[in-house]
Image 1: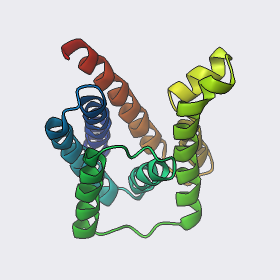
Image 2: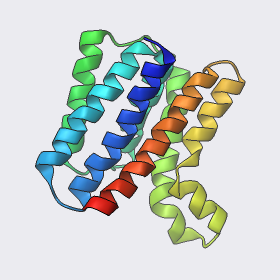
Image 3: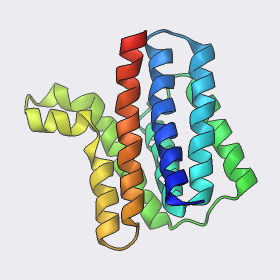
Image 4: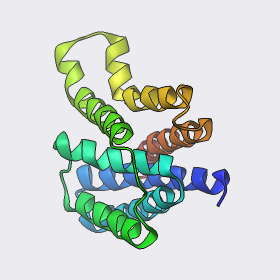
Length: 175
């Protein structure tokens, strides 16, 4: 598998993750939220078994969400189960607990900041920083700078984020 395939998996994962959430949160559509959640779990799981760097990201995100108590629907559980099944079948990569903890803390910071920052400040920069969850982006970039991650995984994560935001736009337009 090449970086192109990994990039496609990141794109699909980001799009399906957001679309699933919007279907559940806005339309209260558990059926299709779960379908898109399954697709997200498959894309994330395949990326994680292909790339250890992707594994750090896609394992850290659900852990951060659980800690932040952002798992708010059965579609999240279904997505996680599919993701874990793929990891069990494909092989869970051996991860550095330090790097995983750094990624988990970044994901947790993004989720907590996303929910709470506007309650504590009117600072436009801070609000935009957490609205678009920049902690994980910066952490991944720093992991690249320190030679732990490749620049390609940073590019893939940016594609994930673009797809995530695009799914929100598509959802608003068609629902």
